[in-house]
Image (tube, rainbow, N blue to C red):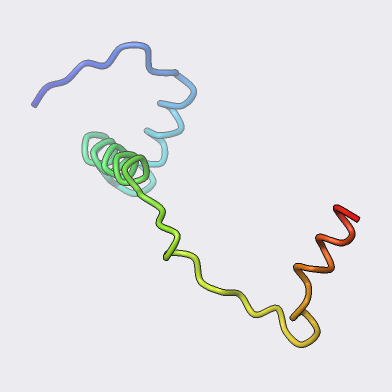
Length: 73
């Protein structure tokens, strides 16, 4: 498929083209990968269950209360 795109920043395109050349990848394939990554990033849904508890080690059991005390008095 032949495609023309307007208003592409020259500096960005030159960097992208150089990266594709370093990877020995056709610019079309590199652009397809970049667009696919962008779509995946844009459509990413973060759920509350994605966050896992973090153990900060011994002595941090009351850290939240201590931070609140410093911040809010």
